[in-house]
Image 1 (spheres, rainbow, N blue to C red):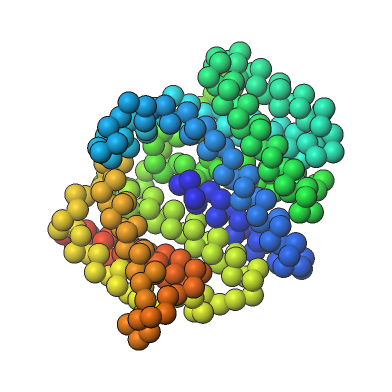
Image 2 (cartoon, helix red, strand yellow):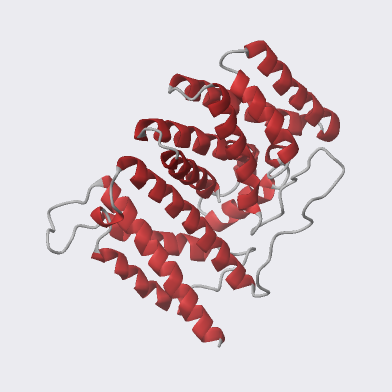
Length: 306
């Protein structure tokens, strides 16, 4: 749910900010910074790149398995902790104006990670601290300062791990404390395929939340950008006959193929074959097509199971 973390935080903050009566420009700044902070914990995935070393580039599935296998060493660990998120958010809020104090707090977090989990965790926290520092400086530059910066930093960092509860190993929510808040992923069905489809639906909902926030900030309507080509996604229902039913251990074929449906958004309209759609129209029509495709595949799968 790499994209969904940022888009959900962006959408929620944008919509809430507009409800408080702030200007659209201010709402955009707050939401944008919140979205960046919400993405920051996944900087720990940088280590997963070592899994691609020596892998045959002509074997994409093998490369994907190696990448995700390497990620398990540090992903969803210290950077996904609620215990770490709050002091980190405070440090990031202080970074633009009280650099030494902020650096001291972040340095302490690095030291704790080193003491508890060793040098790799310390390097990951250092990368996380640097990422958050850069985001905080950007936020300060666009007018998000003081308590506002603290609020969006805390919201982005704290909201992130809850988006990871449906797939993979659960985040270490209470690291470095010797306590476990959740011992396993949240499961709402015993069917492994429906679990994947449900997680896919949550990801799409998070992206749509960001879209709604962006449209509200821009004072535009969804109908201005999504056109009839999105219904082409319904044809993906036939993929239930050709694409292996996805599970958490093997979902690549489903994910790659259903996302490919989104290319319908960049195709010229039959009524105007020489006119390419605008970037927002292409993106949102493609997203709508993928959403329709996901719903169609789920309906076809349920019909087959029944």
